[in-house]
Length: 260
Image (cartoon, rainbow, N blue to C red; front, top):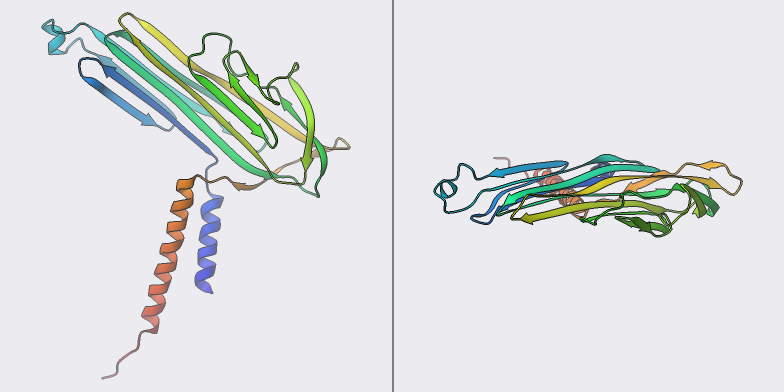
């Protein structure tokens, strides 16, 4: 019984502590004379630069000049009723090189509201994270329960995006679980024989609040963080190791004692 209690406590602590936000950035520089010359992956930012001005092959005239810069970043906050993330990816190239940069972010919360299942309303801010211009490779997706939006350069589609006003209200069922989730991504790849620079990114701001049929505010509460598959596996392995350790300890305690 004590072992079962320990395992249950371990699993509760493990999943209660799961991060609801996962971020990543990747930068890569390729020199055509050598292939990939630099690569970097970090959770919130990456930055690389390359210059072949001291390369022996450039100095003896075998290859031409080449330089490149790649950088990316992602940062922000996520809660039960709002999110705000800013991401950027930039590449700059001169000569025979390629610069690649990207950022990504995902967040999820499983939520519920107090009380019985009943009709209510959700009021939200319209999504429009990207300024008009060339599509250099960015997207944002947000969903709250049955409503969602997909955003690219120039606008958004879906219930949470295609609205004529800054805020809008829609029907929402209270008293049952719903998922609040978001994905934000941007990438660039720059290749040129002359100086070129491209960037991708923007800021995703979104918030909402819930009310009942009488207009009273209803506060959602977190049911559980939605864990990553890797986290589920690690927590499961931890529980198995805990159980195995307890089993071995019990065998050791129950081992017969020989009296000489």
